[in-house]
Image 1 (cartoon, helix red, strand yellow):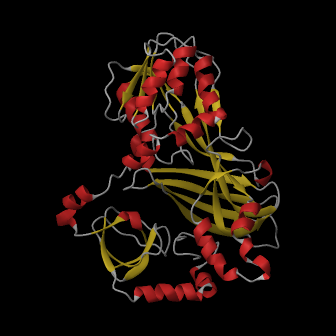
Image 2: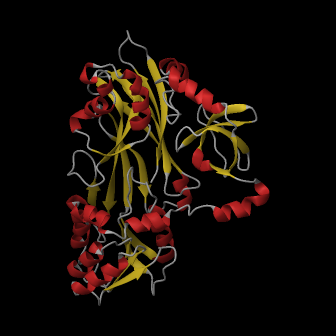
Image 3: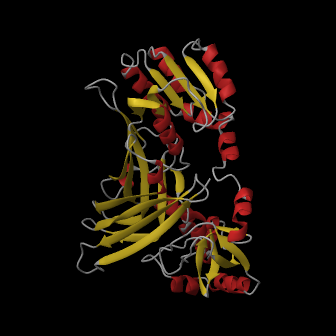
Length: 446
């Protein structure tokens, strides 16, 4: 194990290796354990994925010895010690005070922070400046303008109302309901009026779960995607709005989505964050490398731009979502499988993920519009997401990398998730180890 935070790694390094390389840090943890542990209660059940993690049930009392990071704590349950996810634990009494504890729990959706960020222009400037994203939605409306005539549209999470304005100006819908929960809705009303669309577009401020429409809609359009497709889980609001307001036979935009994965090299990022500490200014700073690993490689790297040449294999879709059949309960755990054939020898630093969404045509035989956030398309504000292994592994053309990806939604903080990657490398070279196995989990937090 290379760090307290990086708790789900096997086949890449061992706990013994880490203790031997960083005796000072290990001694520090042992010293911390000498202090009195704090008792916490499990808010919900958790199943550890390896021997370093505790498995516990809702209501169990855990003794926390060391708060090793904001995500993982070193804890004890019935004499067994291991790592426990901090967000699953709450200090306080047990079941008899459960209702009181739940009442004091912070907003699990973090709505004040989330919608507050959309009440300022920073994020809207970033999204509107993303031409690939915005033009894709414009093209969807334009290519379906004839079919949108006299239709009723809901634009969920409309922000500044750009998609609603596209509908009103490029097509002739009978009504567009622009729904926005943040304070930006006040300005969206001004923009609608400024652009002469107030007779068609009605701005409604409120959460999708709470707003009321005067009628059902023929089209539900939303730009709900986050990093690694699902992060922040705005998609739940879209699904609830679909079930409540989309008339039978209505259309969802996007209509489907796919998460794509590829094993990759990341030489420059590895050099910047890890190799740098080998000989800066002619000095040996290698004792800082375990700390660098904990700080930079235990969480995914957002806004990564992978070069096509850094892909070690042909990318593949690992998760596909049908926006007509996907249910809210399905979001708790979504898993996919992958099987890659290494096409070029190199250093396997990790996996890169991105997504594609598809907008079906309203008319029979019409073209599907696609928004692809991958490296072979124009860059978007999402870019790609990089998941770094603990250390690079040499792979060779002909090797296979197989395994699975699991998106596990946080049961308490509903906009968060943990991405777990399991992989197995089968070598094509007889003189090398035939098989290497590894697993690593990455918390994705706001």
